[in-house]
Image (cartoon, rainbow, N blue to C red; front, side, top):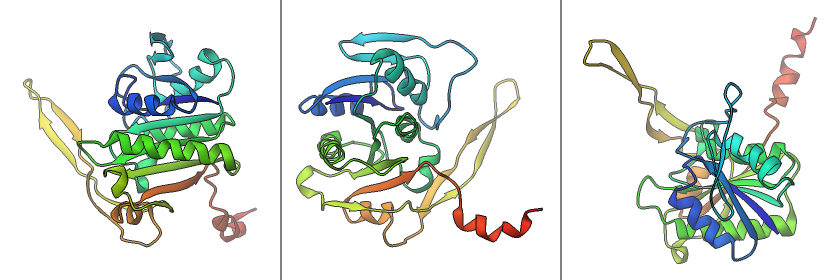
Length: 246
């Protein structure tokens, strides 16, 4: 079994290295990831300047681009063939609810799926003191489940792990994407020359408390596994909008 691992926190991030070390116990692992942090890069692709790939150490490669670039180069140039699974993570922090639209880690799994490879993203549901060993433990379980059962067509998994020791996790729940509530604030300041500059605030202020969501699973101390489909079409809306056709 051959695995390609990427992330958006960079090739030197602790999470990706703990993940790779654990998955090496069951598979041949190649890490191809950005050469620096590219958090919130989403599914961006580098088109207007060249990319470089540097071998950091055996089976570890740094890419001067985004997570999406890294997966494409990992499959097409480093491995030169499709791996059995693309694993993205372990992310520093959660990717719950609407986070997946911003996440470079989730985007790496999306790109793997677009390339026809079973893929999943895995994140720690905490903002500090990450228990990456627990995340790596569950990543290995998910890899084995995918190898045994496969995944539905055009579907990736978004996995979030509670920041707990392995023996305190309450199990795995199959969930739906929840809904965050954001304070979309922008912080405006002035530089020493008196010119305005801005920090995108967007501080999280909560989430909708609904059953069956990724938020509920994490709140219960469970690993959340959300199947995400590449087809973004609102099929119900097609029927509702049929009258618009001319």
